[in-house]
Length: 172
Image (cartoon, rainbow, N blue to C red):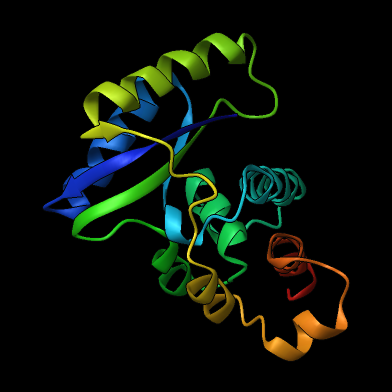
């Protein structure tokens, strides 16, 4: 899995998604863009991809599309409309774009590197670090992490978000 970080100005979300889908089709990869304000760490997206792949392998996927399944797990939500809040919106977006060839892809490092380069050149307006630049209050509100929970558990926001990602399996 490769993560591409940067800034993109989106005039039309559908056109943006179509461009990502084109790169994904050309390279044989799965590509999903996330609003960086909600992505707490690389591990957050790694775990979402792992669990999405497991659900697909078991025939338990919620979505028909792997990229959407990864989005659902990253959001910890079963409803696609709720999970879309983690995606891009019209206007200027700080993004983290996940590029993954899949669990069984041969030569995945090269394929992912080519797809990541295509995302950088065809999609992003600027390449700059965005991972870890999340909005703690926005994340806490979205993932329903309250003060009481933070006071009681011996974990940080990242660990609690990764827990929410894993709990999507249980909520079936």
